Image 1 (cartoon, one colour):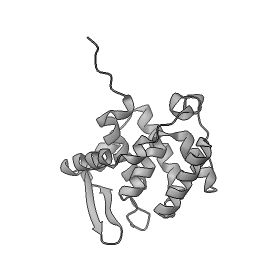
Image 2: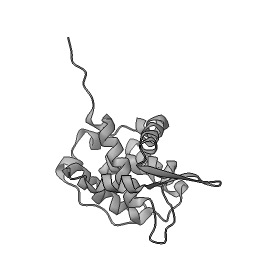
Image 3: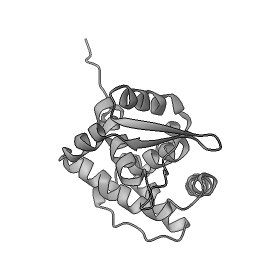
Length: 169
């Protein structure tokens, strides 16, 4: 009998935590403008889980790059990244549904751009309790993404597509 193996990347609690960190770090500008919608969240989650791709996208956009560890640079994920998550919108919707149902995230609808997310007070309290080294690293990488918040979703998608195409060529 074989025991089920769960990919750490697919752990629901880890992914919920990452979504909370992204919304906390990137959800709102200093002027109070909401920035995280489904499209941005989807792109940012992919980039945070693939730091080499994040670095490549930042470079493509002319932003300062990251200093990556050997673990990040020479991991299986960085050598042969899985692009399937870029086409799986249902996983993100499930994560957001759980966070909204548990009053960790508030939702605002804007007719031209869809749903935008921000942390509730309960969500802010939860994120403040994150002490895990990996989640602290995710927070630092999220901070780096602030430099691309002013770009449109189409510009972000274009950059990501170029980086992925360049790699597969």
